[in-house]
Image (cartoon, rainbow, N blue to C red; front, side):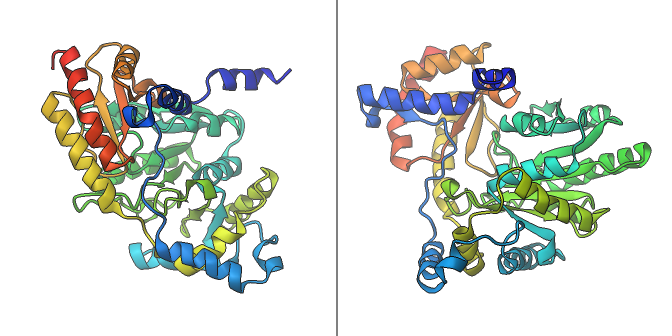
Length: 395
C-alpha cells in the first residue's frame, strides 16, 4: 500500500492534467478537429533553429563520454558562465558562473531552493492566483504554504494582505512574473512595494526572508512590457527559470537557479543548491541540453505567434460579453465565470467541446483559465462554440 501522504496527493492530482486526458478521450470520440482544448500550457511554437543546430553540433563534435557523462552537480562551468553573461548583458546584473546552478527545469529549481532554505514548519507565501504545484513543492520540504489575496480588478497583489501574512515563521515569498494563470505582468512599482514590505519585515524579525522569483514566462511579454529582474530590487533573491516556454522544449527539463550576488550568505547558498541537486535525485541537469544552451543561449521562440493568438481570442471573448483582464505576458486568459459556480461553467463549456481549467486549481475560485498556446486555426474553429456558450449564459 502506498503511503497515506501519497494517497492524498494522488486524490488531489493535477486538475490540469486530468482535463488534458479528458480532451484526448473526447477527441477519440468526436474527432480532434471538433475539440477545443485550452487546458494545458504546452508550448506550440517550433524550437528555434539555432537551438536544434546546437544539439546537432554537440552530438557531432563532442566526445560521447564528455557529452553524456557526469559533471559538477551545479552544471558545466561554460554553461553556467553563458547563462550569467546573458543575464548581465540583458539586465545589467553582475552574476558570475558560480552564482548559477543548472537544474531539471523550473520545478527542479524550485525544489532545490526550498530544500536549501526551509526548515520544518517554515512558511512560504504565494501570491494568488498561483501555479498549484507550488503547494506540493513547499510540502516536499516540510514547509507550509500561505496565500496572499489579489486585487481582482487588476490581479496585482493586495499589499496590505501581504504585509499581514508575513510573520516570524515566513521564510520566503514566491513571485511568478508574468503570472500563470492571469497573464498579468507585475510592474516595477509593484515589485518595489513588495521588496519594501519584505525588507521591513526581515529587519523586524531579524532573519532573512527570501524572494523566490519563478520566471518561466519571462520572455513571453507583449505591448512593450517587460518583467522586472528582481535581484535589482531585493538582495535576498533566488531567480528560478525554465527554458521550456522560451525555447518550446518542456520535455527536455532544463532550467537554472540564479542567486543574487548580494544575498546574505551567497556562497553558502550556492554550495547548498549544488548539494540539493544531488541529494534530491536530480544529480545534474541534462548534459546535452546544457551543451546546446552554451552555444545558443540567445535563442528565443516566436513571441509574435502567441501575440496573434492572444489578440484573436481576447477580442472575441470580450466582444461576446466575457470579463477578463487583458494578458500582458505568458499565454493565458483568466476569465471571470458567468456562473457563480465555476465548476458548473467548466462543465457547461465541455458540452460545447471547450476545455477550460477552473480557477480553484490556482486558489482563485470564480474564474477559469484558458491557455491560448494552441494553433491559430483551432482558435478560429472554436469561436462559434464560444458564441453558443455566451448565448447559454445570456451574455
